[in-house]
Image (cartoon, rainbow, N blue to C red; front, side):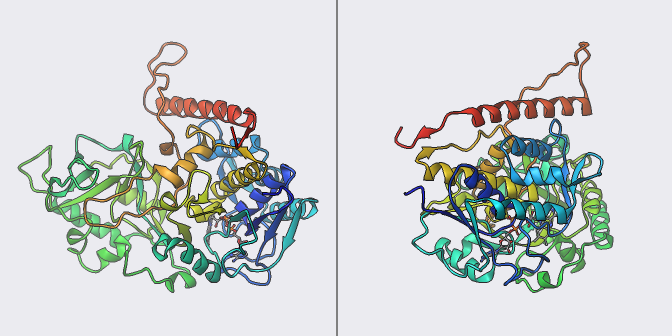
Length: 472
Ligand SMILES: Cc1cc2nc3c(=O)[nH]c(=O)nc-3n(C[C@H](O)[C@H](O)[C@H](O)COP(=O)(O)OP(=O)(O)OC[C@H]3O[C@@H](n4cnc5c(N)ncnc54)[C@H](O)[C@@H]3O)c2cc1C
């Protein structure tokens, strides 16, 4: 590959802008293709790059005790354009990094437009990227235009590109009460790769179940946007509150059915209903509530799901939701370099890879840009280790997800924000400096600090590592 052949970045959002910047910073030419303003998405309002389509918050900026704060810091250290623009246009917001969305997007647009190695083409890519483009990054986001989405489906297979996410809440295992919950697969079926005890089960007796159904029906819900109602997913994976509205028994015959399960703590009491949780990451630190996709408001989800026995003190790595979202079945399709395994000239970046959020999308742009640039320069660049926030996200989208299901349901990969459940565990200090034993919140904080310190040390080593020749 000639180094004067430009790398093409499709999409001038959070990920595409960051990717283009990283490529140009390595002295390589880049062509950005952005369809706005000629063609709009359902959510973008301007023709600026890196437009924030909803909230103006990059969430917590605490890099010592918060996973997204750590990701901010890693990106700053990796010379991120998105983070530089956010820091320049930050607004007072306590511990969060909130930005002036207009100033932020204008700065990103100006910096890219002024860069001598970046050229911008304002047109939709409405089919497969032309064969002459030897290196391409597709960063067209959750609202990828239909024509390009169809072309991606042709490349990947129809079922490998989703058009909405139906997300069930995900719980930190450490917050589950094991005096109540027990491990068992329905009918003890081992299934492919299972042991027969692969699910965590939380039992409800009749009165508790009825209170739970009542709470679901009365709860505050989020509204569907116009274009969300026209997305053809609704019957396929109904939100639990809609199932509850269809009748008090619906959930007990659906995701909460108690059949084939015996309460290990009270073998003689038959549960009236059971909530099952399934392992969600290879580290087994995160467990998702099977079939619990929902449009309830976040505060309502926390309140109502903590009514479930065993989950009274549940901490949620993410809450449930249903959104319009275009994303790949990345664990099956992408290699560790974020390339389409079947056509490696094509890389993906941003929300379409199965991360969730402004910062996470930009982070995947940063990596895709660096990986594409290294490849073009004939260098071998590995992704950062899984102990870093950047590496933990790559692990989630390319490998960390568990495949298979022993309950007859199709297992599906769902997008995720960065969170501490994605990091390998660490032996955290058990005592304070004065020798006092750490308990509860203090212990959690000590563990988080140990994870973030390890991450930044490992990131520094990754950034400082000399480039290796591809032939080496
Ligand atoms: C309605 C909505 C609200 C959201 N709210 C939040 C929030 O509050 N906080 C948060 O952290 N995350 C939010 N997200 C999720 C996500 O973080 C953002 O969507 C984020 O912008 C994703 O970054 P991206 O770079 O992957 O895609 P985008 O930023 O959407 O960029 C994709 C770009 O590609 C362009 N494009 C699409 N198709 C083509 C084509 N065929 N040819 C050329 N250009 C094309 C688009 O015009 C767009 O500029 C929201 C998502 C949606 C859909």
